[in-house]
Image (spheres, rainbow, N blue to C red):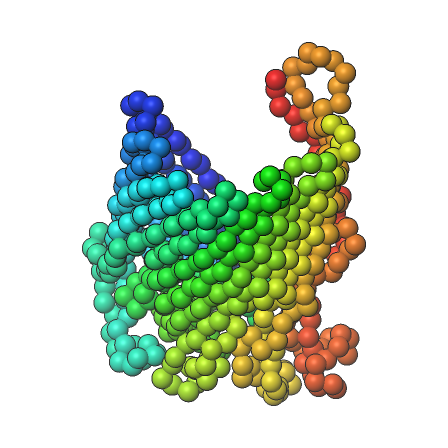
Length: 468
């Protein structure tokens, strides 16, 4: 169960045709919940979390001439994170537990300059400084070991006291070289810091992820991204093709330790490790924007790998070697074709294909009081079946014969998942139910179960209109 409440307020002041001042106020409230109905009693145990985000940003924009413009601004963000609360709903023996809030501020100052020194060369130079402050009230554990398992004390921070501060410069550079009227090269580099992270367990069928801000023991993610691409226009700009490659390194990625249970864990650093990640890939794009038959095709080959180094053997993930991350999908293809036989009708076909995401399968099982327990020696050592889907839509444009009408309307018929593909959302493992479902260990007690969200096509009919 999810709930969101979002709002944005924009204010723009124009000094002259080249100078502007813009302010943006953003408010966001996100609350995911997980419900545990108790069979036969009507009682529901509720687990909920909450993220409250407020942001105020102001920018000064100055366009000096056709070759120079710059932007400078300030941004203040505040996040109040409620990691989790458990409400028993009347279940005996179950205690209410509410994890303390995590309050933080992020203050940023930034500037960007766009410079076109020649008709062929364009540069974009940016610099941002961020300062992150984790504020009290807060309780932080002290440990005697590098894997943060043996607590030797608790440090208490009062409300309004600074618990931990992080910060640094974030430069970025973009370059475009126009080799000819139809060919251009682009290159870029960017350094980014991320102070709010998501911790998730891909072996469970439910979204039991947990959000975590940077603190005394958990450092923010730091990423370096490089890209290089070539872009070509063909047939008098009727067709555009491009190829782009990228490489990214990330420090301080969060991953849960083997056997970790971070559900309602007060000191979550005891159940996670911080490591490194690499992502890289090539993307090819073909686009034909005009004509009675138009559309685009996109293919991406990419990899995403991670590595965590733990001192204790029982905390090591894949023996401290590199392994596929949950986002590793080497092949991704997306394509859209639109047919416009006349001014009143548009037929669209959209196809998507992705390599199945990695997930973990057990290497063995053992029984504890006749309950099969899986043993996971490797992480993300298998893949879900490949994902693919075809969608169709038919848009009937304004068909009125009246020359003067107060509004124009369109009918839209959409068929999602035309050929009823049962794409796997997840696979998980548990005791076989009366011998049903295929067991991955032959006649063993453990079975593999697959969850699919959509098992058939979804049809919708929409009428949209706009006033003249």
